[in-house]
Length: 312
Image (cartoon, one colour):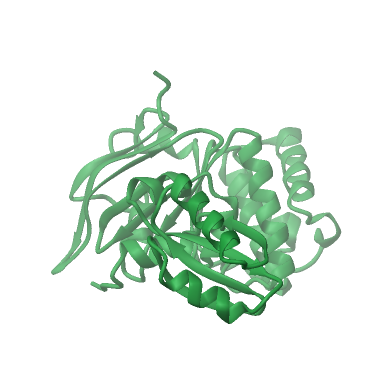
């Protein structure tokens, strides 16, 4: 069996009276983007810092490609790229000088260092900003520089803590495209974000934690199925939308019917056969249905229905 790229095993961390992480376990594979989700104070940043060798747990372990971050932190760091939630570029350096500084710190030398800096800058779209002061970039370009610094030593695991925070829509789309390209190249990406719809679009799997404990983990579709969460269904009619709503609210397995223009969105707990039977009854009742489909599984739904918003 292939070794997991990242394995978090029974992780535990306390800060005085605050139990930040409690017996937390999960794994992720190469080429996978895993969303790390939870309320504020859930323990996400603590877990990420431990995985990045920046903090030491009170119990448990984290391995990267089978290497323990506690037993062999130097070896583990060669495979880890950590992007913190705050970016503080050094004053007095332009973009290339900033990247060159960190390339030297990563042990790159001579022509290899210069080639790597150019390659990473080009990948992150920083070519035309090469001589710009690192402290004078926009938020979006600053995050690109932050990511570029993280990629210089070609890590296999990227740990990204709120990388899209504060970005405008275009910058978020472009940043998301970079991450997908990195995953397609085989890198594993553990990413935390509070922008759940966007996170749900890019992730292969998610880990939801609350008060330091794992709540659910897996693909969005599997979590919906395994936890028997209600699935949203969208129906559009050419007729009276309120008549459609009145019909739906008295049907088996239907709840939370909401009118949205010519559509009604409702929660459905039945299986596919029962959903097909519902459509047959709607047509038999003379309702002119022109659209009837399950909505895609939603990460926001998972978050709201599996967590309680408890802080610590």
